[in-house]
Length: 130
Image (cartoon, rainbow, N blue to C red; front, side, top):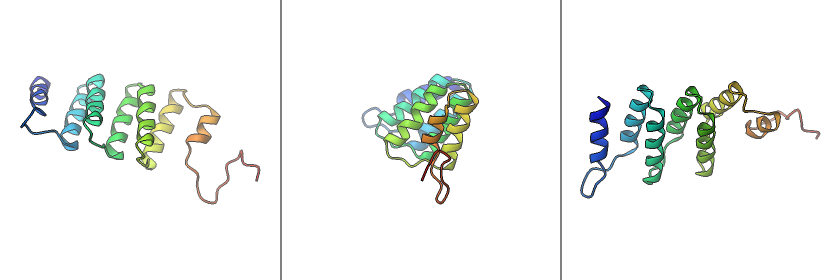
């Protein structure tokens, strides 16, 4: 099955041919993750970004989640930071995924925790003195 999908993927995008949209990329990304082909899924996600498409926060969340499940924490953190650099506003799922993933894999210290945690109106950080 994946061989046929790869063939279709390779045929797309040439001159006068259909260019993949976000939906198409996500289908391929999901398929590669489902077949435990993490590197292929990540590469295809990066190809989507390089093509000029702007993945939604939901797509970033999906890829970050799968990378964390595959214990590719550095890649997941890289994509989370990329989302911020592209001025996409993380949602609650984004924060939960990266927070839980970094904590679970021992990649979070107290300073990072404070920097990463979104401020909550009316609630002071324990480190605040004022």
